[in-house]
Image 1 (tube, rainbow, N blue to C red):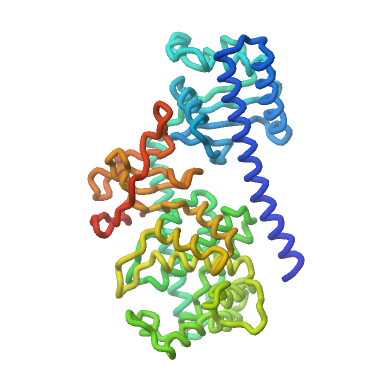
Image 2: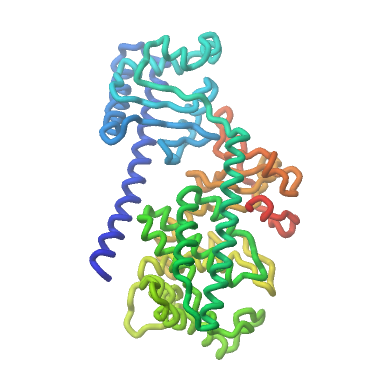
Length: 477
């Protein structure tokens, strides 16, 4: 592998870890803010304990201000965000968030020039009764009265109809991109069958559209991978693998050109199956030894096909050849000398296996629920798959992926629409009519929302949408 590729991967890993360190530092800062506010309930303004806690927070804020113009925290639907990054919370932080929300505070922004005195004043202000803020005409006027000029407060952010319409428009756009990608895969297969040139400009344009969409809203396009296209499984599978691989690249903070190259490789990974008889691919019974050998040749065939395509990336050829070379004895094609899979091949292998597990074929429409598929993937880490990449994949997709139907302890039924920092507590759309109309008028809630120090809703189990006759597609398209 070239030194350039190695350096690029190193930069991507560094970028990912830098982001995680920043999120951890943001959580620490919010914990310090919580500590100052708690201390303000028991100590006078000049007490050393209170001043020491305020000084610690001030030092953390100043560290952040070395590389940014302001330090901004936002509270949205029971979740805490530092700038645009979701921050994991515990029960104590949830209680502080409840305290803020009760006072109509949906965002706290610290600006350059902030002093320890202002932090202490702010702590005392946040401990005042909610009626005080009503008397003052809101939090903005209350903070102005205290002459706190380097802390701005935003009101609670509500998901209004305009914002909801924007979400629906994004999903519509994602659906169009997904189907365009499926049509592109069909064209590629037709071109290979007819020995015509593959239109790489179209492939590149479609993949770049997918990358832009995922970078803008990963959940919208990823949710469509859970929709089963029984009659077009072979084509949809290639698109699903591309979407999941692009999403992994984005989650791991790869640079955009790398993510696009990963998407092309994901879309092309199974192209060698065009040389496998369709009756073998769709056979519902156990394959004969001869048929299995035909299947096992598709990585070799794929690499050979892609090597003849002008402008095809070398990484796509490598991934097509390597994506079934797992760490266990069942990997193929077998090599005399042990060669480690390229990282792109390892990512695509995870996407390929996950989509194959949850997929339903033309001849067998009973699917494995996503949460069970996640457990299967976790059981194979360190053997078939890179354990670090499996962990990243699970963190990205969640224990309950988008499209999972849930039973809540409140007695309500919901469908997962977005992930949060807590893998066990996604955002869900509450279902009442089960006919798809809820996506227009239903209520979307975060399972991170708390009340009185306890979670308002918790997952009690999952529901098979086929058995319940719930058309998940209506909620995700």
